[in-house]
Image (cartoon, rainbow, N blue to C red; front, side, top):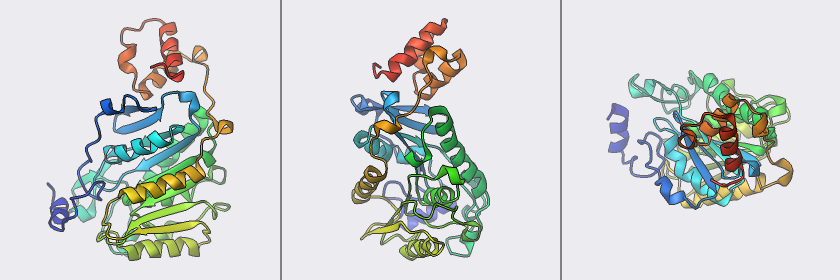
Length: 319
């Protein structure tokens, strides 16, 4: 265990799920979700949860984990959301491994460098622009490939991932205005580099924070809200949870679900547009199959028609 993890364990901060620097939270066995209305696919370090019937998708959430964690850390939370809102596709990327100054320069999964927990150190976020570009590329790919409007997309994240979601979501291009942003135990990172894109001032922001958080203290959450509202944001809600440390609980998940139901309800008029499998190239078909986690079912395929039939069955919810 590295020095920083030892420090947080000594402070009693590694006992709850989804902590800032915890090891990846064990996810539920996929076999327990056989009857669930979604599919779980793993590609490299990214987890994608999508409707069994691909054509029923009408929204997207991208969830960014906290410092030192991986996509696995919030897979269970994503599955809870997908169970109640099966029209959503949820993508959970994993941050790159890079040296973290606060971790004695040792490498760990991190969206950007963190030099300390004080406000002055919070301005030193080397790498945040690269991670911002990564999230933006995920949103753009969904828009281009599926014709999903940006207003049907939400960025969501915990701690450092929440800070990245806020930093990214409020600074996208004018035509990329999101349906909302969810910040869990996060903060405004790199304030001197942050501004709100024209027309984005009414983007709904839900900031959930433990009142007893010893890492990102509630005072920082309040200051973040005040700073963003001071720049003109008109729809920034901060909800606090008594006794909650640097973690999430079921009350918070319930509030997030209610927020998502409000901004991303199922919508027939926003169903994704899918390319006819018969018009796809074999390369495109293989990409769809890989992304859906169906590679094992395509073993031994030789003819394009076999790939087409598999994709069609997947989209029709027959698998």
